[in-house]
Length: 478
Image 1 (spheres, helix red, strand yellow):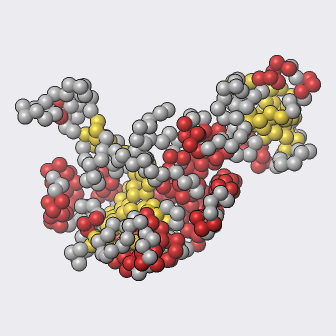
Image 2 (tube, helix red, strand yellow):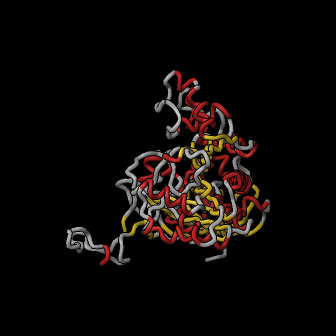
Image 3 (cartoon, helix red, strand yellow):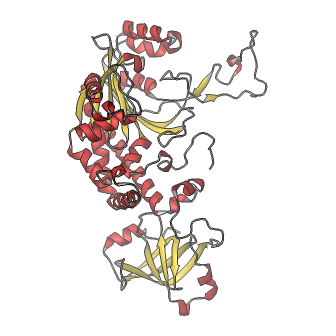
């Protein structure tokens, strides 16, 4: 079964007049003579030329869109337009039939909404083939970036008893009979009898455990699934998504921002190098889609230009306080065009504000630092002004926040004081506080939402289209 050459390798080889075996799925079959075959290695199909006069008519009838074939023949220079080589078939074997009356992916344009309903088949379309090859490359690039820099890949737990963000929007993990869970004398659920002997949930972040690793291994990163039970039906939220979370000992906020900028540029460049055809296809798809929009709603840059824009510009760095002043004095704020008006210091920035700073004001990616402590998490290092913390967000065109991070609070007294202020029980995070008790040091880290990155690099508009099987409210199909 392994004696096959992938279509991408054949198309790139420049060879002709050689015997080959290819395997893949039929995209189209024209005039009983020309098969467009695709095996997922590239968006480009390989044309198979069939000698229909000397082929069993029963076999020809089974060559339908979606059918899986094994084809042997000679690779020759193409006489037709649109492809450089063809395979003149000497033998065709049907590996799997596809009923043309029932197969949902007929050779025509399908809406993204429809394709989400058949997510088990959407990989076979050009759009999703391109997206998931790019996703694969970005995943590999992230590991390559950190491994080249001596980071240790740490697997943090998927089941945890902590809620790192303190948001409380978690999926609970239990093996209780939900209709009849054991109760305490006071009538509350007795989690001491549960599988782990306590209430547990799916992780919202590997950060806290990542910090433990960094306090011994210096530089670590996590890359795994995280879960949020937010009832958010938006184009930017998922209930299950992947996060990259590096944690670095002996780093301050500037070191943290430098590493994040370096990572983003590295992985974008890597994808442009390895998946040029796919990104060019997705760029053209986006241009075609934007032609349906009014002129004022179209992007100033096409996808390739937007990616290059992030590589060519040093990210603009400014404090939250400076950003608030710019936004307060901005035309959309003064003319009340923002949905959320900026009244003054302390406002939590929305996507529209972040995009204004990147796309209109600076016209480059932006790193915002030193946010008010009230709108940030308990573990962020408190600045000397008593009002702000050493946090950072990286903002990208078209997407807003893509990275969030901070220097972590390494001073035990300050951390305990902040936990008391916002009601986080210290006894539950005793292990986290131990890293401050025994050889604590300045350290920092950030989180990069992987799907947000894939969304940016592919130019797609809905986060449900960049993860193979999206999980969102009322949907856990496949």
